[in-house]
Image (cartoon, rainbow over all chains, first blue to last red; front, side, top):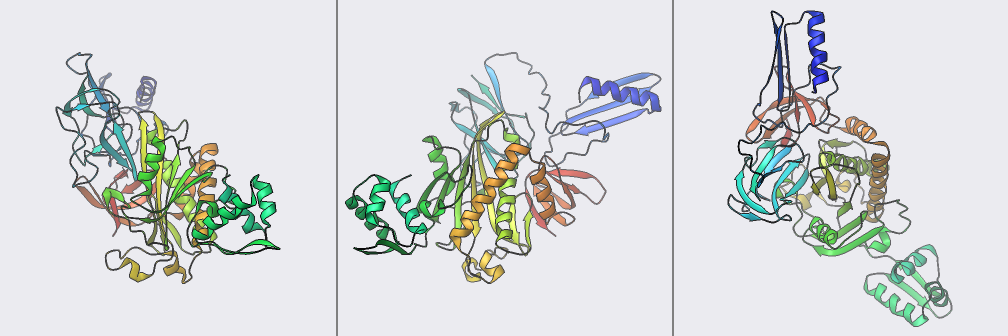
Length: 158
Length: 322
């Protein structure tokens, strides 16, 4: 949802005397509340639930199929720290099969061509490569958990 | 076209082919032709010959050789290059290796036997030698993103169901996202491996397994929901004709997807989807529940509604009919 659409909703709220408006899609949530002419805007990060994506309440607002997840700015502004993010909605797997060892573990050095995980959706298995050289600082998703498009999966020290 | 392929096509097309004519067409000697005929006989071709009339094909081998699959295939893209193995670990692994060596998009890898065929979560997929079809397609769709890759597995499911229906198989349906069923039992499975970047698909390897002529005893107790074309129709199917039809139908669906987008395929899927309206049980990362399937969303997800009326969209995980 962009600013123009938010403005449109506010206009509609005013015109129709609506005091509360809530929209939740993927991990994007917006609450608009009108109290004595004050409209507050609040965006919260909700826990990721890839299998759960409620329908938009407002049918006239066209929703793009997938929007990159708005990630909070990293507290450290270290240019040598980068992230591997998910290119699609799906399930995150750290290993090729339940019996196999994980592709990577924290502290491991990776090269651009190294496979770091698999994201699966609708029987498409996407082998995610590091695409950079560096050291895994943190595995940011849980094995077997649903992940969103654009969600950070690994923190890398380049 | 390699000599062997040209000779086989010529033999398939004509009653008798003279060695001199073959030598002329191929720009080679009669001895070279004779050598090739010997190789073909060792490959399982029954070829009759006499001094006056030349060579005649009596029967073809039972294998899905490239020169046989390519004969009058007539596809625009898929199958322009075919690699065949008598036995291999998994055609998807072979396809990946071929990609690393620069294999072109449209390449099809076929195996008579797979020793490490895979399903979801590395579950094994059994290939019965001479009774099933195991193949992988290499695609490199330009301008498509990893999050659109599901469109290619779904177009493959649509293509395989087209092929089965053109074989007069009744009650063909698709179980979301891409299992093909006959009379509610699984006859074909698809598993796609994607290699790409954030916004670009480098290559897609679509692994396809079709149960063609297995009998009930071939599946045994371990696969109660599996079936074959033969079990459901009572007739032994021509594996060569079926693989050609499947490749043609998938090729047509691929062209449709690349030229006109996903809408038509989505509509086909909705029409053939046996999941819509059914109550299912899903399980994903510990979250599970019973829901009713409403529709397939344009992003490929399965739209379901729970008992409280909440609509959710599923993108992965196991679903089972209740």
